[in-house]
Each structure stands twice: as structure tokens, then as C-alpha cells.
Length: 232
Image (cartoon, rainbow, N blue to C red; front, side, top):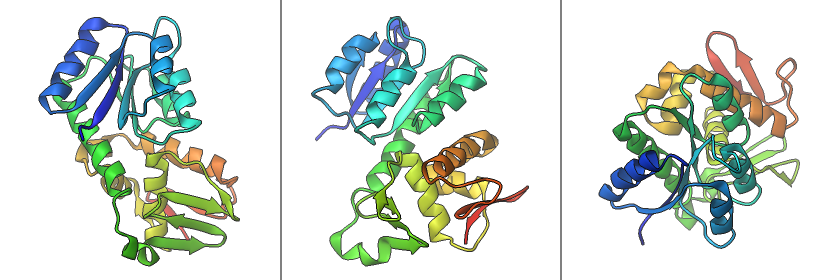
């Protein structure tokens, strides 16, 4: 079965360029130029990954991202305006897994698509006998890599794929300080992420919000300033 990629951008030339490169990688592309048609598509279809432009003529990419996260956890990559830091932070906070700024190199976008799909597939293709060795429980927090589920005090946590991957990495290395660079590599497996620690910071903040954790007096995710993060 072909991997299905949703591409949404109101700039036809950019959408067509992305489609060309994705098609050359044997991906099936579903392309839209506005938010209305995109939301109609999502009512009946579930892609394997979405690439969403922030600025659309009718409904923003942020709103589409938020709508997707109400029911789906497939990876989302946001396309943002050059140097618009607030767009990057907003997208990550709403549940996006990654972002890339315009203008961008198509091959870099393809690399990020592959990294997201590789990571998401890895956490959803474990064999049944691996369940016991892929479940971690820490003070009411239970995370299961086989089923890609996480509960806190027996209540489910709705985590994005990236949030889940970061939390799993921290839980797997319980008691150890995990540097931002190591988290980048564990989660994305791509070295170019190491130049932007702000991405990890935003995801950690969002995880804390969902876990009702505090950065000042954390119960779970602790910041070791200048080094990284750890769960004890």
C-alpha cells in the first residue's frame, strides 16, 4: 500500500513542486490549495502524514492542525514564513511534529518527511511479544511503545507522535540526564535538528501542560539547566 501524503498550500507552484518530489519518492499525494477542501477530505480520509502551510486564504494551517489533533495522531509538518518564530512555536504547541521555513530546499523537506514516517512507523509495528519489554511505568505514568499509548493516573494522555517519542526517550533513560542533542537524535535521527533547541523546549513545555506538571517544581520532567532533561 502506498504511503499517502496530504499537501496543503495556496501557492500552486509550491504545492506542485512538493507533489513532484514526493511522487518521485513513490508517495501518493493528496493536494489542496485551501483549508475548506482539506477539512472535507479529512472527514473521510486519513493520510500517513500532512504538510500544512500556515497561511491559507480561508482557514489557517494552525486550525487544520488543531482539528486533526482532536482525533488523529499522524505526523504533521508545518510550512512557515521565513524567520517567523511565533509561527513555529504556535504550530508545535498545537500539535505539529516539525516545521520548515520558506523558501526551503525540496530535498530537505523530503528528508524530514522520511524521518517523521520512519519514526511513526517504528512505534506502530512492534510485535506482540515485545509488549512487556516496551511498557514503562513511573509514578502513575504508564507508556506503552507497542500500542503507542500513554496514561497518567489511569487517564489517557493525548500525545502527538513527537511528544510520545520525546517522553518515551526520557522514560527509557529514567534517572539519566538526556541532552537536547540526544533527544533530537533519538526522536528524529537527523543531525540537522541539533541546531534548534527551541523545538525540544516547546515540546517539553507542551508535555508538561498535558501532564499538569510544573517547570518550577516538576514531578516528572525535570530541567537540568545547560545539560538537558530527565525523569527520575
